[in-house]
Amino acid sequence: MGTINKVFNVFQEIYTSSSQDILMWLFLFPISFGVTITIILRLTLIKGNLPEPIHKPWFGMLYILFMYILGVIAGSYVKLLLI
Image (tube, rainbow, N blue to C red; front, top):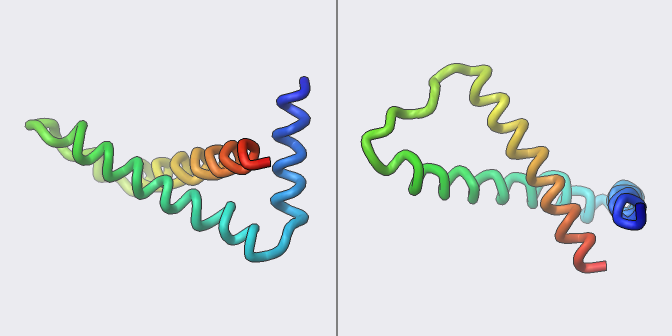
């Protein structure tokens, strides 16, 4: 229960902090996280004779959304560790 309260406090702090912090935690960190994970996946998984990922617009949108959500969670976790 204590961990859940800490996570909620982090989210509350993010949304009540200055606009520069909001930009950093909601845009900069998720984008850099997603780009890093994508590069790692490209270098490791698609190095061999594996086919390219599915070239469908909805697949790309879902992938971007998933990476964004993961980035926000990871950024909140990092901020939780810094508190």
